[in-house]
Amino acid sequence: MLEELLNYLKKQSWNVELKEEKDIHILDVIGKRYKNIPQQWLNFVSRFKSIVNRDNTTWFLCEDDFCLQEENKFRWNEWEIISLESVGNDSELENEIREFWNKYLPIIMSVRSGYSYYAISMENGSIVYGIEPEFEECEIIADSFEEFIRKIMKREIII
Image (cartoon, rainbow, N blue to C red; front, side, top):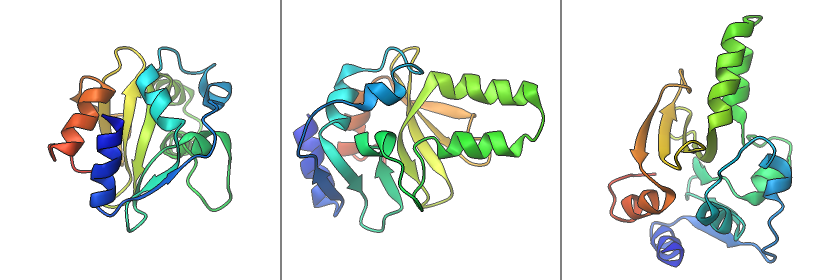
């Protein structure tokens, strides 16, 4: 199914760059925070250096996005950081934001029509969609990563 997605994205003019190595270092970075990460997503994310739409406004977070921090580039948890910065000294809201992002691992980010994301629920593996200004208000759009991929290829979800 992942090869089908890759071919689909290429036909949609996405820029896809494969990784030379398939070592999974991502767990060193996010494994302490996130539990129950679906293996299929781990296999997927470890294969690519980047997957970006043609106008560089939507991208899959790939292993390097989590493991390497480049200047002038959105961090993998940028929307969480923005939310935390917006609450000032309100520790209750800060805790709520952290709790939310501890349950949802971002997998796609977009700046195409405002800041938005897709994330995997650590509770049940579902995929959610959220958008600014309230990133923590999200909706379930697929029950699993596999279903999410199928919906993308069927154009039920436009990324």
